[in-house]
Image (cartoon, rainbow, N blue to C red; front, side, top):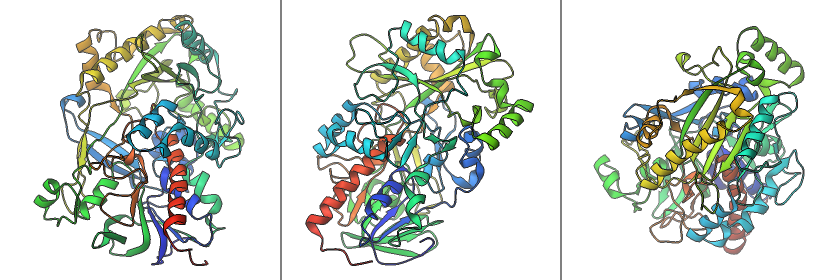
Length: 547
């Protein structure tokens, strides 16, 4: 069922992204539970959404994007940056770089220490196994039969460059892994798992929503439904008000709008820090000062090199006649370079001796972007690129509304590299990259570093390179932090403190950043959240009405 505005649901889920689609799938499995899934955007029918290498195209579709301007600061070189999120069914999983990185077991054990055992690896590992339909088949907590289809770069796109990357990693002391997500908290290098299947993107909507939408009469998808505020009766949430004035009511509301949007919905509803709300004329319905704080984000530096031969690079395959031929090949076979995700290879390394687990991530690709053309195409000469970032930043930023108008952007302060630990990790990460690139046989393929370039050598120059050339990692978390402490926004069962009938499940609740890209952890945590919500329902609520 789609496009209904039914008014009496058991669960109203705000946001059809990574978390929302998973929750809609889990909660609607029981036909007696009525679920509404709200999405501010519309359909993902445009063919660009399905083509893995069309990321630059979908990231240019303004109608399908939320744009969050960053307040200029020293850590961004005092320049204006924009953080983008998906405004379409599937959310950011419909526009992202398709990397499927689980994070390390220790990440979830750390989350559990800050919240409860519900979130430790003994619970999250099985959640991963449940969601995954992995090309490699079943393994230690790896799933083979789940709805989310995951593949590795195929033989049709691999070349000598890929083998050189693997050898260089091993020569640096980083072991090759058939599955880089093996849950061992150890270093590794290998082919990146991607949310790509048979040459097409597997968004959260593709995997968890579309297969069930027409089969489950108890699940209602409402698109073009941007939420303005919560409906509150005293200290209980009873529904939401949309930007166009419509109201959707439910017994329980679950915000799954993401780390950028969920805090704003709370604040516009009068839930948050009085020091933020009162100057805007918002009546404080419940003081919760941590809303919009504890924002954590990766600062990702794209480094590039000229390589010796086009045999080691996709650059010429992404332009002109070759691009046209590759497009025809893709349309006919769903194979070739257009099936590649943003980065074919990945490495998780310890930037210095003595660490108990990797602290830096490399995402590595056999292509390089032409920044003279705003990165919309590859360079004319052969090249390779690598994104590097410290995995667990400790510098805390914030995001707060500046108006009661939901169409106006919030005040976003990343506060990048505020701590000495983050600056040290950024410097050590770049030095680790350069050690990696200098290893044989990669050293024979690389001709010269072009971005940021050899002039950035000292500690101060490397930090300046981050400020000048780096971007956000699109992995923001923490703005509605989960915790067992009373100062947290949500408790370990995802309930917003002080407000009944309201939960949050999205990246905003993560108290720390998982070690890598966030789409996989968000889906796994949402799957686990389904267990918690249904467990709570069985304990505290009367049996649901028949559908």
